[in-house]
Length: 271
Image (cartoon, rainbow, N blue to C red; front, side, top):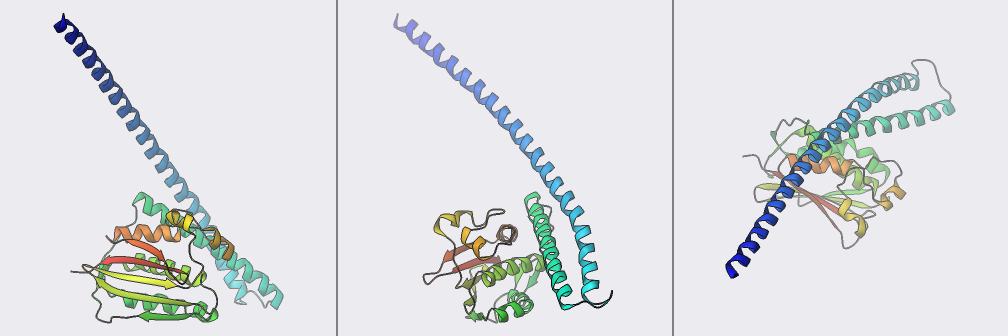
């Protein structure tokens, strides 16, 4: 009698296990199909963004070229009022071109279409070049820029210079944009094992506690950042994050005790 009961229990357990296995297989097939569908949708989205952005960039570049000619006086002299209105048009057009370029850059990072040409580079030289391009806006805001413990013997890093230029531009532009007039920005550099670590510290508006987890997300902008600067795509830090990861480094930030934020990133040293 006992053996019969045990046999029935065993049959029941085996049947339940078989049913569970069938359910797991079915669930696995459903998840595989769902993943394939998501991949197809993501590819369609990527293609759509690429086509639309390229189609928009061409006429906007034409508008920029025309406005340049008009503003330079090639098509006749302008009054001060006319020039002022056209400059606003030019600036709006330029913001649209930057936004489209950011969208294309973010899409290439997502789809892994970006090609990297890595060469040994002294990153502080690249930093100097980027800062030189920003001299006028730094001067206009009366910001105090300084290097902390600048190390001229810092080893070369293996980077794609144009991609890394975009990272430095994004981080420095944010520091400048969100630091009040008369504030300060400190740039630090040091060797950290097999990496070089760069830090950009500002005395700006900071990042709210409840929004820090989203700071590297695509299209995300903190509420206080939107209040200070209404224009912005929310793609700069997303792009910087993707580029740094492709270089084998990491990027992070921390709030400063006295206000503002410090962004850090690491890049592998060239062998």
